[in-house]
Image (cartoon, rainbow, N blue to C red; front, side, top):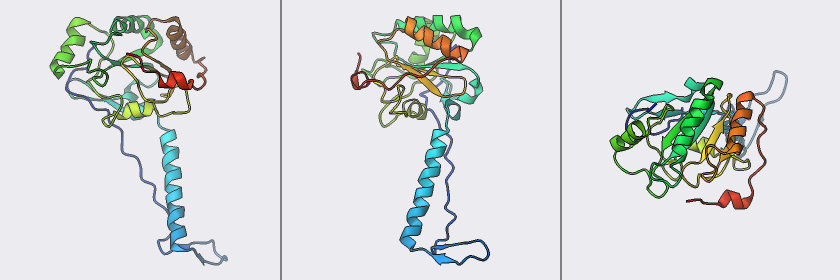
Length: 241
């Protein structure tokens, strides 16, 4: 199932701005019967900024994959909240990559686990070795005519760098966890559970039909998966081509 359209961008709703309740004069309102005390303006400003950062961090922590959207090849925005309750396997594709055999493996995964709640998300990406070249129409034709995929393939976007899509910033955000850190190459696979949280990551060298990936998908679908410990430094820095 091809999601038609032009070059895709992932969009993130605007974050709610937190405003400090303290008066700009440095006066803090007290309950009746208590004295009013004036704080230095510099201290008041610092306190306001601290509250703002704290609330923004809390809001970011609460975000899930459902707070983001993908864009189809025909330019239509698709909120991921449409897929609430499903298990998502998000993969950055590249039709000229040495790992392109995984495309058909991903199709088999979709067919095998669709009725249990799995949806594979294919996101073409030209970030690594320029292995997804051509016009938007050519990229669309590759996945619609050459592979005849039943899972959704969205418009081309960036998984890292200055043009990194908001969804990928979310997927890789947990730097202390096993899923965090920069995407190194095409066919990096992220598993998002039914609550919208990123729970597992598999690097390109792990085939889409590997026993490790299959067992993880089955555990996530059954609600029995326990997230892995932090990746080793060597694995975190490994770049596979």
